[in-house]
Length: 145
Image 1 (cartoon, rainbow, N blue to C red):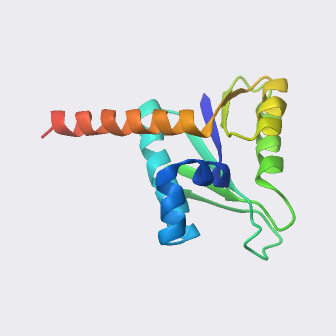
Image 2 (cartoon, rainbow, N blue to C red; image 1 turned 180 degrees about the vertical axis):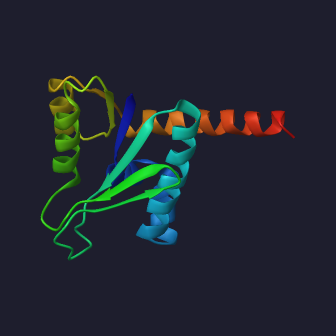
């Protein structure tokens, strides 16, 4: 199985459209738009998509997880970073036969994931893939109309 793990806030701050939404609306709006766009990518590529957000805006003492439009959305518990959660997911998947790709522009995170045998793409490469998936989805919808 192909699994994509996304460093949520890293991507929010890297994509101009999400950064603008963050400034003009809210952090929640930017997160929701990211998940919405990742859902299209998951549908088109067949990848299992997980997006991880730090819980530094929450007092929760436990990880929080939900599935939104097929995307697994994980908020770390207070005091734990998204980086730590991503490392744990990649480590747990090591040897499972799953192909792991992590989307982040964090240099330390990239090196760590590569060291575990995972692939890494930048936040901007992820955006390029999402745009292409959205175009493909539009083509599919138009074909059936």
